[in-house]
Image 1 (tube, rainbow, N blue to C red):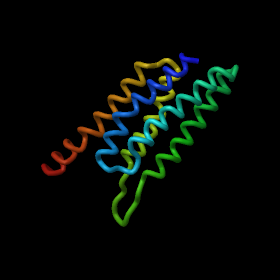
Image 2 (cartoon, rainbow, N blue to C red):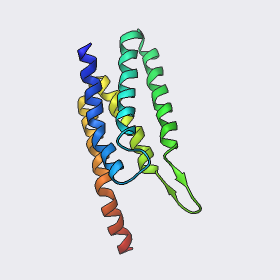
Image 3 (spheres, rainbow, N blue to C red):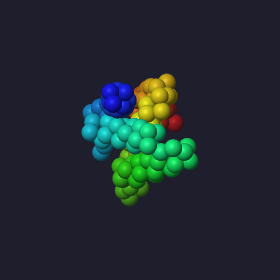
Image 4 (cartoon, helix red, strand yellow):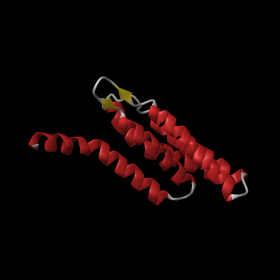
Length: 136
C-alpha cells in the first residue's frame, strides 16, 4: 500500500515544476492540472499492473491513458484568426502523463529526464525563440 503511495507522491512532485511554470506564465493549464494528470496516469498504470495479468491488457490501459490525455491537451490549444496558441501546454500535459506512467513502471530515470526536459524547454526555449526571431 505505501509502495503505491510513494509512486503517486513522486509523480505528483515531478509534475509540480511544469505546473508552476505554466501557472506563473498564466497559461490555461497550471498548478492543478499537471500534477493531477501525472498522478492519474500513475494510478491507472499501478492498478493495471496489479490487477491485469497479461501485458496485452496492460498495454491497452496505457493506450487509453495516452488517448485520453491527448483530449485534455487538445482543450489547451486555442486557434484564433491567424495564430495558434497552447501547443506547448498541450504537449506538456501529454508529457506529464508519460511522467506518471514512467513512475508507475519504476522507470524513475525516464520520469526525471522527462520532467527536466519539459521544464527546461518551457522555461528557456522562449528566450532563444525571441532571440532568433529578432535576428531573422
